Image (cartoon, rainbow, N blue to C red; front, side, top):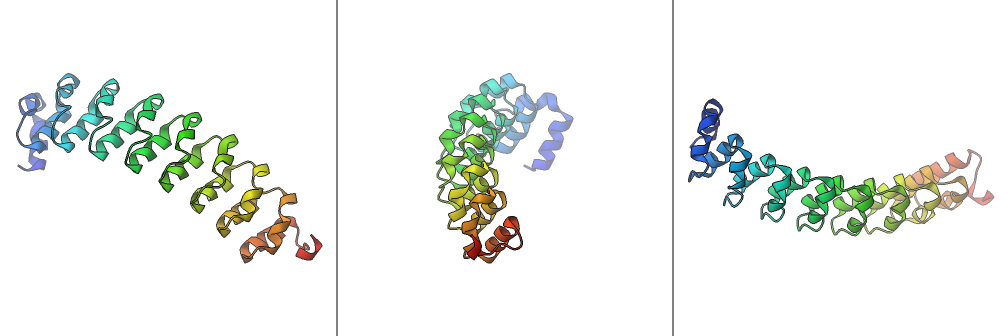
Length: 213
């Protein structure tokens, strides 16, 4: 019943793994699956234990992974999202678990990320903002989360930055101040945050004062 001993046994006797593919103990099946042929693994797709199916998700040929797209175990679906060809990942773009969707957002072709712009999870939207083509970032200017808008401020074309110079979050305004065109900076000379005001003065010149603009 010891996983370590089971692993040692199959490491020394890989040719015996087939005899344990249907073993009643899940850990023997899971470890045996590491040594089975892919053809035999295909017969184990309905295994009742998620640990066994996780091994399958790692070892099955890519063209067989779609069978596990709707697996009830999150880790199985994450492995599928990590291995599926990028052009097939959209089948998991609406997965109920945000970690699965985040894997999708990391790997989906950049031109097909639009459908994830309004994802309900902040971390997913941050990943989208980090990868979305620059010309499309204006679609995320008014995201509800400041951490997402901060990513936008760091990447968007400087000509598109003015709305973020008035953002409610000082971190976003500061990031926008770093990259904005000089002609767009004067409003920040009177910003409520000292760091933002200071950076605006630095960029406009040491002798710049709010009254001069």
